[in-house]
Length: 66
Image 1 (cartoon, rainbow, N blue to C red):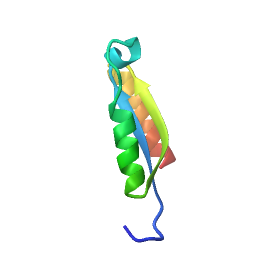
Image 2: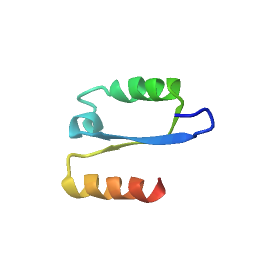
Image 3: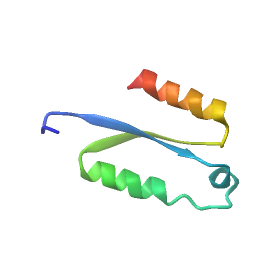
């Protein structure tokens, strides 16, 4: 990556256990910190259920806005 290259990212977390509160999400923070440290700006984070249609719709949405 060159100094003039701007890279953005979105983070997609998939899991009913995260949405229910049964499991604490520690991955998002760690991933965002690491991405920022290498010059990648995180524009959005989404947490979705373990539902195939929702996962596909979310990935398609992210693909459109890249």
